[in-house]
Length: 334
Image (tube, rainbow, N blue to C red; front, side, top):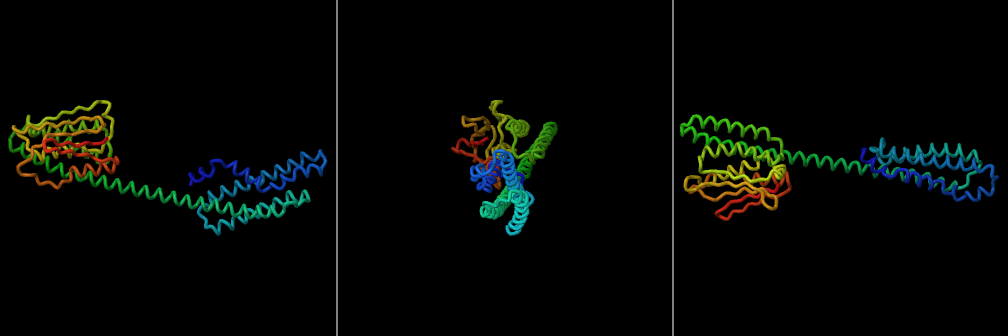
């Protein structure tokens, strides 16, 4: 409602003054004739009364407009017109008693009656337009709120899909370490796993995070991968400090790194080198060689599609994917 008042009040004095001129314009036109008919000593009194009449109508217009776009905003058109009529009738009665009876002069009476109805109808229209504008604004606010809630719900649903997907893959890695029988490494792995899950849980409602936060998470996560694959998996991260404040959806890198492990053969003959760097378009590129497994992994395919959906919802941008058969690259627009 305050926005409506501010919109109508951008140049209020100009409209009020013009409205006052419209009502008493016949008196203004008669000024030369009146001055010829009266003594010069009467000029101050005449112009004082004329000025007071002018201020009276300016105040009446201002009061009606503010009432119609304020307290009377929710009235029906019929009720609004009736109330404007009563207010104008009372004001005009005061006007005639205080001014015309005093001067014993009723010239321009037809114009005054016309201005009476014009003022009632105009203020009624202004109030009704303000009401429609207010209702339209409220609908837009409500639609925006519903869209925001829907967007948040969809993003939360997408983010929640990551947790079980990553969790089951991590349990497989932990199971492999347990079978090796290296207790110290297994315990370190569990510690890092808890750090990773702590980041996931704390980032659940963040939406967008800085690239620096994501790369910090990757440093913890890559330890788990390096332990699992020994020297057969390594990471190269080349991102300038100036670019680390750019934003991206939280947990954007987790499904990509996870997919590299799930869909590729990593052994002594297939060394996996994961590269994370910025390109000239200020896109974060994550690339790796392609070593297809003899038996394709059974996955539901939610990882990469999930990431695309979250970028589309939160950033309004599309994730690009290039697969040459030898190199697989994902481009994240920050």
